[in-house]
Amino acid sequence: MSDDPRASLSTLQSYRHYRGGTYTLLHVAENSENRAELMAVYVSHLSRKVLVRPWAMFRELVEWADGVRRPRFAALLSPEDDACAELKRLVDEGVKERLTTIEAILDADELRERAKP
Image (cartoon, rainbow, N blue to C red; front, side):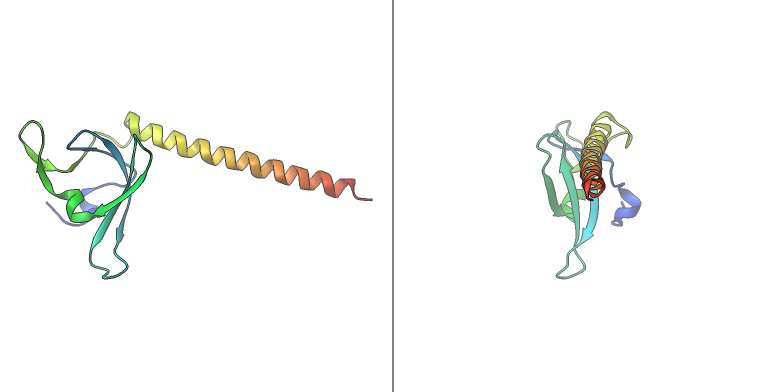
């Protein structure tokens, strides 16, 4: 198994934790102190919290409930699975909501400018 995250994992793809939770990997970052230790940055689909753990631990082989050793986080079949699609939908909704607010502010500013003598 390669230790290069670009070769083994895909960001914005969902992964199943060996205990059952579903997470989306957001980014693989380097430790700013030593530039050597890579960190996995991911979001929990249940709590929606953004979490960080050492890369080695993210990829560590652990024993799953069926007795087979696999990576702690195993990629789900496709980045387009239901959980990942839900996360993308939530991000899109947040973006649309912010754009609507910005448009309303710009419209109000334009109306104020027109009302000036």
